[in-house]
Length: 117
Image (cartoon, rainbow, N blue to C red; front, top):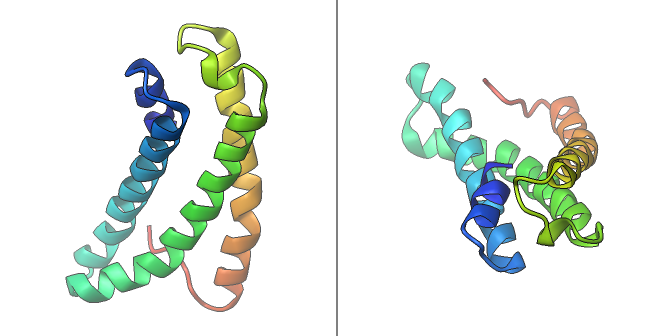
């Protein structure tokens, strides 16, 4: 949501806003994901590899679902952050992202691949 809001405030195109949201989601996920591994003394390459598997796949699915909702909701990409409709749309997109990513996280967890944070 941070990337979406920043893109909207910066008046980026729809594609630019979605790209910024994806970038913010991936960077945020990797930062939050790598930190616990590094605290345990795991080397950067190993920590990044593990996080790339878990966080990368999960966030990719989540962001795709969120972008689909944002694009397919009439008027949402044209709304401003000062309109209540914008925030309802963002909440709807966030819920859709959670629902879409849940099965991915479930399958990864069942296979023993877990987030550490």
